[in-house]
Length: 376
Image (tube, rainbow, N blue to C red):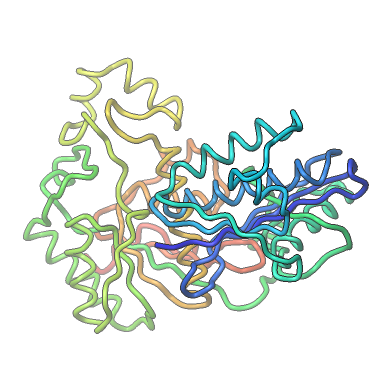
């Protein structure tokens, strides 16, 4: 995959109220895959420009750490310093440059390109939106980033959660992108209620029948695309639906199950007996991973990235996502803006259907959850 990072930063006063912005694009289609913006308080143009680059590279790494990246900025200083042609003299710039180089070193290749300001309007707009929001006592909200805001130079990146500007009670703007979330059919591990992570487990005969039942239930829906986790049990389930709908199946690793590491194949009781301290830590903190596994925090990050890419690729369409317990719960949690503890308060049956409408102006609406009527 090839990605383009466009980044900018500016200060109204130099030093003065500053902000930065970044957008990541698919290099082939030009489609924006992610954007970010943040106000920085009082600092200089150069600090803001570096912060924009760091934000853009961070977003690109979340999308595909194996991508070849071209970073485009209208700051000749940053481009020349990152390319190694100019020395970094200012002490405030050195740690920022080191962080940008650390992020760049994680990709197979990164090329830094200077572009004129008129070709960097998207990132510049994001920076101004962030600075304008700060001046009004607000936090930059990506749902409002479609319209240009006040004057100044800058761009922004916001890794922190934001408060949606509207809720399900308000009238949303435009048509939503709808995700139909189908959990795979039964496997031998799910039948015995055992941890099933990234292992390749086939559906049981019952699981195949459940997948066929889901396909029959979905036959009357207008579905534009099918996206599946790459694991065998989800691909097998997705193919049953695809055969009925006549659609291809595209896989996205972002929707695979959490890697449960050493706990794979064990029941909860067995894990409690063998790894009591590790299990307690895992239940108490979503950033803790099972031994040799993956934390829920890391799972949430890649699921969020996969969702964002889907919303860009399939804007205002209906997409069937065939996935697993944890990613589906992550999507529901994101739609409801629920805390991490909510993951332990949801129950999803095998081959169950859930449905979320995602609106461009911010809110998401959970329309269905754990629906198994087709299995009756």
